[in-house]
Image 1 (cartoon, one colour):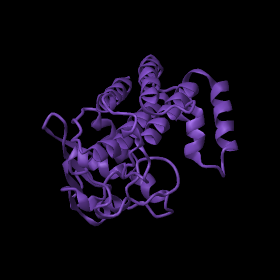
Image 2: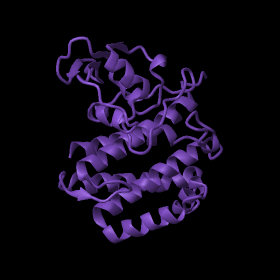
Image 3: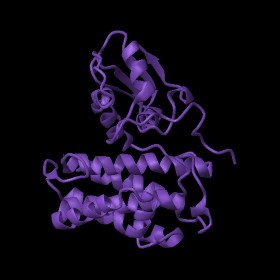
Amino acid sequence: MKQAEDFRGVSADLDSLLSDLSDADFERKTGFKSWSVDEILRHLHVWNRAALFSLMDAAGFKVFMQDVTASRGLNFRDFEKGQAGGLSGQALLDAWRGFYPELSDAFAAADPKARLPWAGPSMSARSSITARLMETWSHAQAIYDELGVDRPLSDALDNIVVLGMNTYGWTFANRKLEVPEPRPQLSLTVASGEMQIFGDDTEGERIEGSAQEFCQVVTQCRNIADTSLKVTGENATRWMAMAQCFAGPPQDPPPPGARAKTAV
């Protein structure tokens, strides 16, 4: 699956960003709910491990989810710290770095249509590794922002664009709202510099601009007001005001100006 290699590439980009940090840098708080770099990396590592359990070890995944259930009512960051063996700083980076290639290899060899258990409904193997790609990319944004670094463009964004399009209806249904039709067409500049069209031509419903900024909005790394995306049409405007391409209860985007690259 190409998605498995794209996950590896996004992880490798983050790996390069973190490789020269001091242990003290891993304690820096980011703009994502004041999570530290350590907390973000632990979160990614723990759920990468869970994804491999879901693919390779159903019994192990069941035990993991029992531990998740037992942790309810506790500080979930503490639960994830325990699952990561209490590691932090460069030691945590080494553990995460040693594991994400294994996850990529396993999914690259998997049947894309295989159904895998997860915290919510089961999903295909392709959807599972795409979700890991999306979560790695989106959580990494907070670290790039905190360190004041412009992140590299990646062809892997195409996967998140498609995920964003596919969760158009979910964004509304998750809030118990009627799904407005037609869904907007996307006209986005991708990593190569070329403009790509996603979706059908819908008169008066359109989103134009950078694929990276679109991905930042649907993953709630940015408020739509903090991008240069051109949004046309009532449906497109409503969607971009609350877009959510990830599972779970409805989450509001960050307020305008709340998440941005730190000046260095």
